[in-house]
Every structure is written in C-alpha cells, then in structure tokens.
Image 1 (cartoon, rainbow, N blue to C red):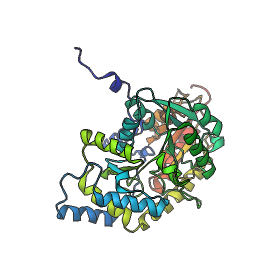
Image 2 (cartoon, one colour):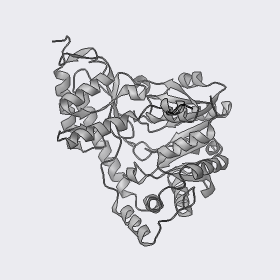
Image 3 (tube, rainbow, N blue to C red):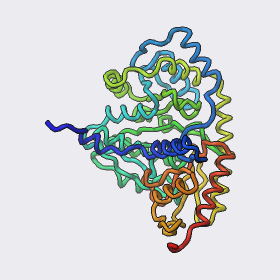
Length: 403
C-alpha cells in the first residue's frame, strides 16, 4: 500500500489568518516593526480573578481527568450564564465543553453530518467553517451577501441555497469577518425556514458581548419555545474574557446531539483542560465589569479605524455593528501598481503591504470575499493609527501604470 496523507487531509486548506499572523510574528522576531491587523485576539490581559481561580485549582489539586463533557461545576455555570444573558433554560446534560469553540464546532459537524450532507454558510465567512464541513464529509453551500445588505444574506439568497440535502445553516452574529449583526426579523425568517425544511441552525455566538451603538445580542435559540431544540449554540470564553490560550468552548443543544459529541470527544480528545475549566466557571459567574470595559474600548477603536479608512482615497468600509473586525473595501484601487507590481487581487494587496509597509491584513479571498481585506481592531488605538497611516501611504504611492 502506498504511503502518504489521506485524500481528505490533502484537501484541507490551512488557516489563512493563522498563517499571516505567524508570518507577521516571524518578521517581528527578525527585528522588523510589523503591525498586525490579522489575528482576532483581544490584546487585553485575562482578568485577575480568572487567573486567581486557575491558581486555586492548582492548589486544590485539580489536575486530573474530568468528565468528557466537562466538570459539572462548569456546565452548571454555563447553564446559569445562558439563563442570565440569553433567557435560555438548559440542563447540564445538554452542554458539552471542548478545547475552544473551534474544537466544539469541529466535533459538532462530525456528529451531525453524513457524507454529502450540505451546510449553508453565508459569505463572507470565517475561514474555518467550510473546511470543518469538508473534514466531516459535508458539502459547504454558500449564501452570498454584500455591503448593501450589511453583509447579511437576503431571504432569497438563503432560500435558494436550501435543498433536500441541507442539514444545517451556519449562523454567526455578530460575524467574523464582517461584524454584521442579524436583526430579530432576519433570525425569525431563518428559524421558520429551518423548521419548514427540517435542518439545524448552528449558532456561533462567540462575539455576543461585543455589540455597539446600543445594540443587544439576540440568540436565535430564544426566539420561540421550540427554537432551542433546533439550535446548536456554540460559545466560549476566548473572546469575552481575553482567554484565547485557555481553550474552553462549549455547545448547548439537544441531548441526543450532545451525547453523540460526548462519545466522539471521548475517543478523540478526552476532556478539556481541568484547570482552565475551573477558571472558565469563574469567568462566567464572576464580575463582568472587564467585559464591558473591553466592549467600550473596542467601540472606540472601531470608530477610529472606520474614520481613518474613509479618509483614504480609493478605500472604503462599512461601520460594523459588532465583533472586532472591519472589512476593508479595496476594489477602488485594484488594477493599480506598486513598485512596478500590479495589485489586482486581495492577496496581491496583502502581500505587497506586508512586504513594503510591514502591515499585516488578511486578504478577502480567505473569507470568500475577493475585493476586500479584513482588519482586526483588537489592538491598541495607537497601533491602529500607525497601521492605517502606513496603509494610506501605501495607497497614495500606487500608480495607474507600471513604472
């Protein structure tokens, strides 16, 4: 039998965001002054009370295996959080804790998809959604959206993507990469369509605490008494509590799906980190002031980024309603030249910008959004200002013809 990687593994693309972030960090290590707009990671320290809880867990000897689905203490904390923040009533048996929300999503798709099952994914979309679906033998089906619709697909776009093979719809609100937020009416339409056509709604709510201009998060699982039985709600502590490295995510959903995920995880990864689980319970149950402080800082940074972008001729963007990303529209400068090189794609723009101005952005092609680049404002306001000053200089130096 021939050696080599499997056909399935060979078809999986690497994460573009992590690849660009790694390249930017490597350039920094080599002494270059690089500004990274790439990775979606809060730049704040994990709150002290959460770190104290981790130390307490160590002192108590909580360094052993936990139940596969997570400690009862953490699952009860998640239930309390869902009741407090989302008006949802879950029991611990309807919760599973995994190694970050990304891991939660991956196992979820493995447990609900058969070969050839389709998952509708609105575009622009997070880079990992399509690959996770493919890894589980599923087929990603895109429902396109645009700036005119605030990057939320229209009812017609969604409806046209539904087929007899549709198993789930991938909902992200607020979204990565666009920061778009679905209205209650849009959520209600999706729920009605899911009930009519009998498919799941996978609701990634990892950015729920970062909404701006007075908007409040609405979980689709809370819309009707029966909505939570069709919804697989995915969340975690990475974004809201600046705990990206702690790797704690969770799914709340129908008991039969959660049981299947428990079985799958038991054979693939066992339990999430025991110490991080104890700290995550403190994050969810403790004082939430740090979350609001981050939200206020992100809103201010968003305003600065949007204002500066709109002052650069040829570039534009919409003001996002949530998360901490801006989709930079570069269509107005595509086809121009920089240093004799034609900038005709988002990848060409990102490569030339990083090479010449040491500014890292993620090309829109990674999100099924050619003509755009994603910028994260989960960095200091001073860094945002310097980075956009460099981008402005880069654009102003572009020419209509090769020189």
